[in-house]
Length: 274
Image (cartoon, rainbow, N blue to C red; front, side, top):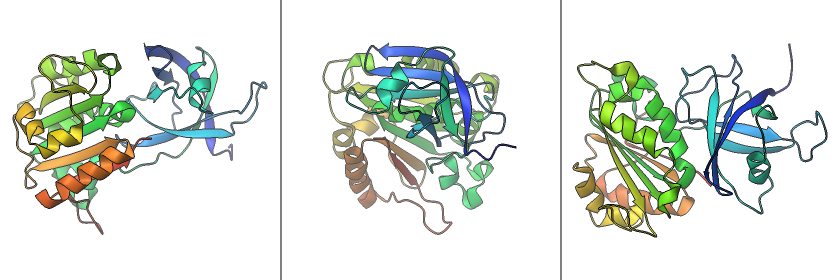
């Protein structure tokens, strides 16, 4: 048995959302790799193109796919031109090697909201998923997981970007909005998904050109969703750049939203995606 802390996986597909800026990569998945929807993996690449070189550069990426999708994994990435890792990731081709740490990380999971970390004990209410940029990826994993849809009455997905072209995965999300989760077809109580795609630098339908924190502060986010941010029935997740998280947390705290402590579930969970 290998004592390596990572596995060698193969690239199955590379999809460009915005050339030179946003992409998704699909890889094989080790049968032994387990994770919870919302967690992230550490991906590794060698520092140069030496054949069979060991990975020395590692970066964290949330899984787009759900835990039950065992045949592959998918990751969503922004390309930082001067970066050490993402340009190399973007240059990968089908069949190339990529390395995955055997341990999954992160706490942006539904267990944060559940008594005794038991998701089955969440029974209704509203789940608010606020993301900027590629922070969307953790929420896609949650939405691929039927357990998320079973736990809540309503799910509100808010995706803040700069340009309309950055609204990746929009077709998939709109399909969920219209049809729900395919594994729950005919279910008597699946959640209803509401989707708010919000570009800040160009008009898009009837959406405001505003930062997510502005929309929290002025109450417009609740108007767009048709739901109240009620701490007694709402659970809020924040994933994106640190400034958004800091500001949103400060706005939500006086309204009764707080991260859980010492085994007590809260109604707020957050993760930097930077």
